[in-house]
Image (cartoon, rainbow over all chains, first blue to last red; front, side, top):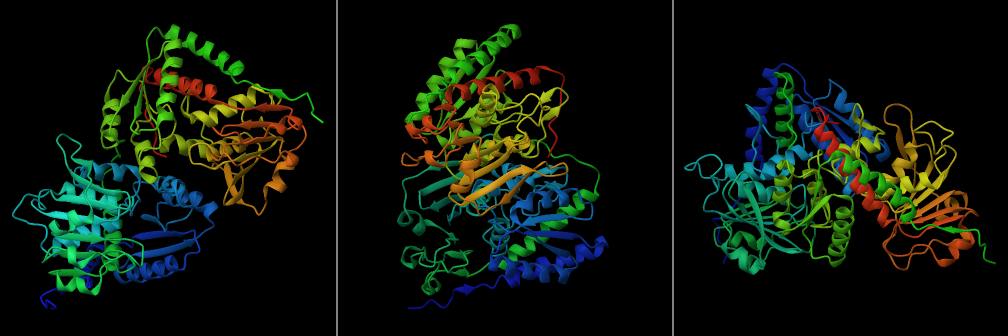
Length: 311
Length: 311
């Protein structure tokens, strides 16, 4: 029996609003912000993604410049772009070296130009629920987790009856993926907004929640399995890079909000029998958040001088 | 035919000199510097190493405090230690989470207390041959690579006929291991001092050398194998965590300086037939360098205020 009430959401209906706002923002700035993307691998899908980013940037008045470099020249290229006043944002198509050296490279991007929000300053702020880097200047959040937060907001999962920072109170959310650039930050963001959050990967399930004191988010081990957490989750977000992995529909809570951010399809078609909302892909929203981060940093640099604090 | 001229070096004969100098430094400072080590895994060898560190610290007047914490409490523990004026140095026994999150944790240690030299500021300085963080204040170098540099200096591989920073001119050195915490930094340090340096791991062999301009070190790909690089290397340094891996003696250059920093024995006994010097283990030297880094940071913090620049 197929429940026909499931709404399948094309994120375009959400991202277009943000895109229009951004276009207005850029028009008003009367400049042409410049984003530099470094491609230092031979990954064909990265090239496709880069071209897609370029088209999307040009549409709203952002100059996107793809710089293809040998990976041995990447660090030097980033440093040049950091120091070049004509460059407003720097991004890199990962993986390049893979492993720890990519994280070193992420930290070589100046926080003044880090549109991906991957340098330590922004990561630390995010994990510690430090939302501002200065008066009126919000910290930069990684694009994919931010895209998912904005989608949840649009879908009404964020409850505006509660104060800012508490709008996921009472919600249980499961995130299946705990990568350092998407799954872990996302779980932290959701916990920081008040959700009871389960973070799933092959090693097991952790609970992310807010603790007392200034370090608002806390992580604790659990011995739970998907059988425990899926039936109680109001939202299930999956990003497993494995064609074979499927979230078992029979474990989902009726009326669940299901979001897939994997390039593989982590939910089977039967998800529509259980879910109230299903978002099959989020890519367009991620690019708009990248552009939004660029415009934030663009404005910050043109504002009064300020300094990043060492965390 | 065994060439009996090979000198097998117990690093104690080198580390004792540094230890005596340190003891004098500490006695003169008329304080008791405090090092905090965080143990957040159940690794029995880490516990053994921690006890060894403790004894070695107490011997020369450093207070060593081992804090055993759950890994979920590690970050908060580090932040407390960062802010605690009574703590002079912070170290962590890795791996804790493994992968990228450990590098995040490394960046949570304040550069004012980072005795292991693993935070981004120090890594960046090292790769870019930036030797000072301020007038008279040298940047902190990770302990194991630093220990090997000091051993090479003691053995006369560093040639004091050349200027500081060029004392490995004319030397070819192969480093077998390219981990982010030992092999890669070591290759960069040796290249920064003028050596032609080959860096070997399972992916292949890279050459580290100095380039022009402010980014002094450069990395280039090669299609060389051990058969190409070992016969031309004046120094071979191995740190492969694999009992089965052995550096093939028949490929070594006669008179080579051979150094093992793996807990496994990477050189077979026959190395003594080829090498002029063989250093089978370096652990004692690593601990002394840790203590030396602690004393540097201790002095820096007690000196006039200074600021770490963002790289």
